[in-house]
Every structure is written in C-alpha cells, then in structure tokens.
Amino acid sequence: MKQIGLWFAMALLAVSCNDWLDVRPGTESKEEEQFSSVQGFYDALTGCYMALADQNVYGERLTMSDVEALACLWEVTESENTRMMECYELTNRNYTSDKARAAIKKIYAGLYNVIAQASMIIKYADEQGGVFTDETVRSMIQGEAYAMRAYCQLDVLRLFGQMPQGAGRQVELPYSATTSIDETPAYYGFDGYVKKLEEDLTAAEKLLKGNDPVFEHSFADLNGKVELNSEYQLYRQFRLNYWAVRALHARMALYLGRTDEALAIARELIGATGADGQPVMTMSGREDFKAGYRLCPSECLFCLSKYNVKTYSSEFLGGGGLKQYNGTVHLAISGGRYQALFEGENTASHTRYLACWNGNGVQDMYGYPYIPLMKYWYDEEVQDQTLRFQLIPMLRMSEVYLIAMEASADIEEVNDWYREYMIQHEVPDAVDFASVDEARQWIMDEYRREFFAEGQMFYTYKRRNAAQMLWGKGPVGEETYLLPLPETEYNPNNLQN
Image (cartoon, rainbow, N blue to C red; front, side, top):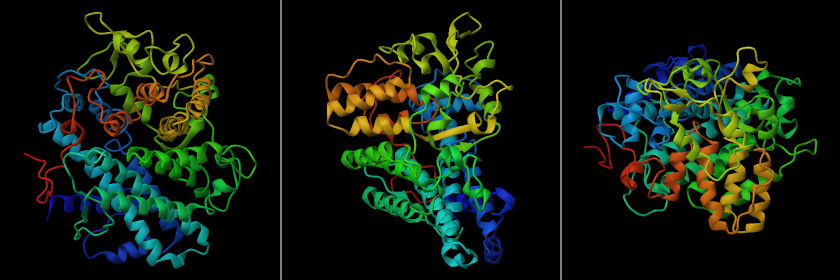
C-alpha cells in the first residue's frame, strides 16, 4: 500500500471521541452504526475538532513551533532535544534532514487525518441523513465538516503548494474526499486544487447560511447564556460557524491574490450585524487585554478548545514560569529581536508589547537576556479558563481588518481601518499612512507582531513572495517556500531527493 494510504488508515483508525473512527477494512457496517444516530454525528465531529487540536496539527506544530520556525521567528540552536532540533532544521531550511522530514511527515499526516474524518462525516450526512429529524442540524454538521476539510486543505496548499503568483515550479497535490484506506486521493495541479477548495468553502457557506445559530444569537449569548435544543449548537466560536467560514474564504482569496474578492468579504464581516442589530464581531484587544486575556478570545471567529495548552506550551515557551533560558529546550527571542519586532511602534502603550511577552526577560547561563512569549500563559486563579485562556486562536477579527487594509487601494479607507485597529492596541495617536504601499509594508510587519505563535507569518512571506525573512539567513525563494511532500511511493512532483 502506498504511504499516503497508510496515513488514511491511521486516520480511520484514530481514537477520537467515543473511539468513533475505530474502522478497519471490511467494517463498513460499523461506520453505518456510528452514523445511525444524530449523537453519532455529534461525536464524530467532536472527534474532528479534537484531531485539529492535536499537538502535531494546530495544537502546536502549525501554530506555536514548526511553522513559526519556518518563518525564522524563534531563536533556535542545535540540541539533543528532538523538538528543538526539528525547529532548528526547519529554521535553517534543511528540509531533507531526518529531523525536518519527521516533522513535515507528522504535520502532513495530521492534516490528512482530519481531512479523512471530515470526509466521512460529509459522506454519511448524505447517505444516512434520514436520521436527522431537523434538517437545520444536518446542514450545520455537514457544513462544518466541509469547512474543516477546506481549512486543512488550504494549509496543505500554503505549505506544500507552488507559489501563488503562478510562476516557477508547478506542483500537484492531493485534494482528498477519500474515506477508505483502499482509495488513493486524486492529485490536482494548482488551478484544479483551488477549484476543489472553493467548492468545499461554497458548500460550507450554503449549508451554514440561515442554519447556524449565529444568525439568531450573538457569539456572547451562545457561550452558555441561552438555551437551545442541543448543547452542540452553543459555543459557536469553538466551531467553524458561518462567519468563520467567510473569514477563511477571505484568507484564501488574499493568498491567491484575489484582492477584490478578499476586500469584499472583509468589508462584509466588518459591517455584518446580528439579529440584535449589533456588529456580529468586533476587534476586542482593548477590553480583552484589560481583563488579562492575551489571546483575544472575544474576537475569535474560530478557536480550538485545548484544556492543557498551558501545560505543554510551558515546556518549550516558558511563559511567565521560565526562570532561566536554555536554547536547547526553550523557544524564545533575544532582547534585540524583541525590540526589532516592535520597531516604529508606540511601545509605551502597545498592548502586545507590554502584555504578550515577558518584557523583563530571563537570562541564559551566560547572563544574556531572552524574552519568553506569554500568550498561552495564565495564572491558575483566573476565572473562565475554558472560555478565555485554554484555547488556540484560528481566525480572528484582527486578521479580517488586516486583510481589508491590504486589499484596499483607497488610502482613506485603509487609514480609517488602521486607526480603529490601533485603538484596539491602545495606540490612539497612530499616524496615518501616506500611501497604500507604506500601509502594506507595515501590514507585513504587523502579521509578525500580531500572530506570533499563531502560525501565519510563513504564509504571509510566501504569498508576498518575500525575498528576505526578518532574522533569516540570506535570501529566500521557492526552494524555501515549497516544503517537500513526505516520501511516498507516488510523488508526481519529484521534490524528494
């Protein structure tokens, strides 16, 4: 069996919620049994979200560690620690080293694990949809599954796909709707892959529109303040709700260079109002940081619940608990990088500068200062840990505003959004940009500041075709931006050595 087939076998054998994917060849009846009730679908989708939050996927590698190492954000050294060496090799673009190959393989397998699970939900929502007495519920569950598949497949494209500008090496990638270990997913060129991605996003939007509780209730009310027929319909910020899918669509459009499309969706999200006439979602930095919420939970259009995020992130990020920096086991940045990160910003009041990092720093064994990230750190005494601290941001309104600013050619419009954006960072006296080009350069730097350890900078560099990465060693090109697919028996791109 081809290696990719083995990954699908792993996906189908994965233990998630209720061991629901304990499926082996010849056990289709067990699958049918799983999806013989609405609760079975709920359990299956919950299992998908758990798989998304796995440390090999968005629980760590695609947010805090590996993908940020690809963007050269962490200061890393050679080490006997496996995780640190994986980051070291990725930072130094040694993609063919054993450690880098192992990291890439885990990410790729983790993404396709989620994709396979989502595809199974989509399939059975069609084949056994009769178990639903409420079509709204079926549409919501299937819509989320389509959105989840699209979310993961977009990042497969952003990691392994060719440059979005269209020039250079052409790459074929698998866009999978496969649910069987005996099926090899179809490979597509760039245009065909994007078409499949758009089809999934469109399907998700159509299924969720009008059926998602976010059309009748605010996100705040859905966080346990209202009673609905099912608890599953609550806490929509922790699910791929309709507005999150629209934000994902805007992210994709900007990555593909479709600025008009990205701008239209961003404007829609910024101006959207709910049933109560209030904005569906606003940026929340000002109020969240005053309350001690460093991850901006009140502006998350989509985030993942992760009860132990502080425990495992503390092992390598340190946060507020790091007493001495050790580059062989910790990820941090030097004092010089900390200052360079916020160069040109008003650091006297900037919330991210003051609250997201341990500005006092810690020292290594030689007395050299390092600055640990504190985003995922919190005191044990805080209230609302589950809703406010134990989470992984996936789509935030701050990104929507940056998309709008980057996609617009109207400098007055850009500056209006910029002033609103900076007020949420406690910088009310920000000076307007003189030109759109100046704004776009600032936006490049702002992605680095705003989404540090949330996994967006590598993709920003790639879609901009940046010739240099801050803190990177030398110029970069497509050989840096195209990760090699893990070794398989079938590889149409011949990227491996």
